[in-house]
Image (cartoon, rainbow, N blue to C red; front, side, top):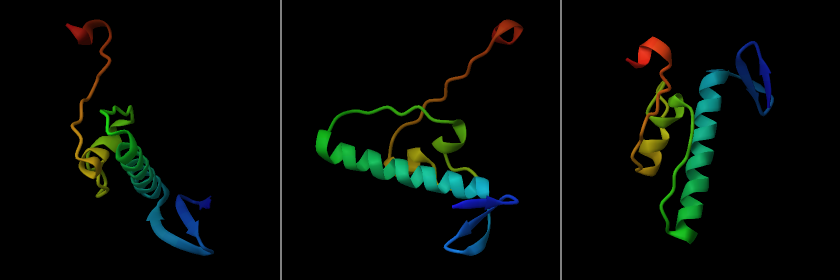
Length: 84
């Protein structure tokens, strides 16, 4: 896979899809398959730490919470005066 001016070159042809959207879709798809495979074997609770864009639907891409049926929790780090 090569990135050329913000687009993906897939199987020798230039895709009109922006590189960031391709990365988001690819990572969410791959992570959901890994989690499903692990859960089929271990049948235990799990937690994944990920960037905010991967949690819920963003840019038309289904998020990990929707793909896995999991609950999502957002954690924010407020510092200084913002914390009051």
